[in-house]
Length: 375
Image 1 (tube, helix red, strand yellow):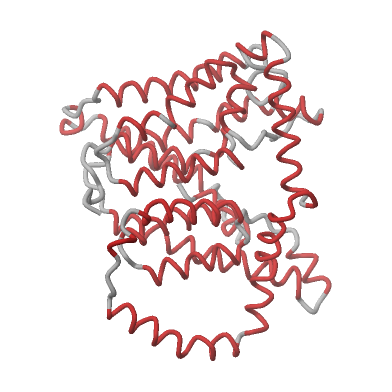
Image 2: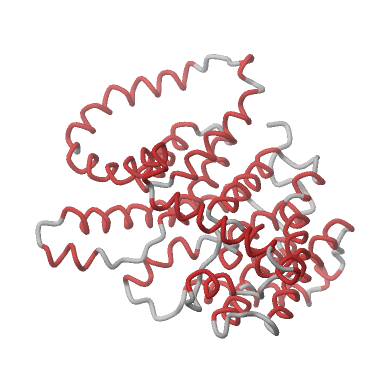
C-alpha cells in the first residue's frame, strides 16, 4: 500500500528490484497459497462482497476491451497491466485471517516517517546546499511528497482514534513540512466532522494537560536551537499552503481546472466519448499530443473519459456504495475511505489506487470489524 510512497528511497540506494513489484509478487504468492488451504476454501463471499468484487473485475475487463479502440498506442497497455496491482491490493484483505491494527499501523508509520525525513533532507540539500553541484544533484530526486502525505494522513486518523493526539499532531506537522495542501485540508474537515458530535461532552484530561505543559517548556528551546533548519524545512511546505489561498496565481491549481475542462468537454462532445470513452490511457495523447501518463486528477472523470458511462458507474459502485452499505462498520475506517475519495476528486488517478484499493478491501472483505464500533 505504501510501496509507491517509499519507492524513491530504494531508487536512491540503487535497489536492484522494483519494491512494488516485489511486494506484489509476495502478496500474490500468499493469496494463491491461502486459496488452496482448506480453512480458506470454507470462507465464502457475501452478497455485497460478490457485488464489489465483480464490479472491480468488470472494471478491469472494460479496460482491456477499450484497448481495441484507444488512441494510446503504448501507454494504455502499460496502464492496463499495472492496474493488476490495484486488484491485488483490493482482494488481499479477504485472505487475511487475523488483522492486528496496532501491528499493521506500526509497520506503516515507521517507513513513512523515515521516508518523509529522507525527502525533506534531500529537498533541503537541493535548495540550500553550499555546493552548487550538490544542489543540482539533489534537484533530480523523484520522491513523491503527495503519496507520503496520504500515508501519513491515513495513519493520523487511526492514531486520533487511538487517542494519541500528540503523536497525531507531530505527524500533521510533518505533512505541513512536506507541503501537502490537499491532505491538510481533508484531514481538518474530517476531524471536525468526526469530533463535532462529542464537543459538548469534552472532559479535561489532567494527564494530557500535564504532558502538553511539559512539552511546552522544552519546545521553545528546541525550536531556537534548530531554528535555521526548521525554518527552511517548513518554508516550502508553508509556501505551497498559502499559495492555495491565491489560486489565481498558482500554476498547479490552474492546471487542474484545465484538466477538468478538457475532460468534461471531450466526454460530452460525442456519442462515443459519452457511452464508451476514448479508451484506456488516451487522456495524455489527446490533451498534449504525447502518449504518456496524464490524467484529469479526478478518478470519476478519468473513468468516464477513458471507459465511458459504464466505467463511471462502476467507480460510483466501487467507491461510494461501500460507505453507504456498511453502516455497522466503525466510523474511522469509513472516514479513511472518505479521505481517499476527497483525494481522488483532486489528485487521484486510476493507475495510482493501490492504497485506496487496499483501504476499501479492509472495509469490504474483513468479515469482522477491525476497530471498536463504540469509538
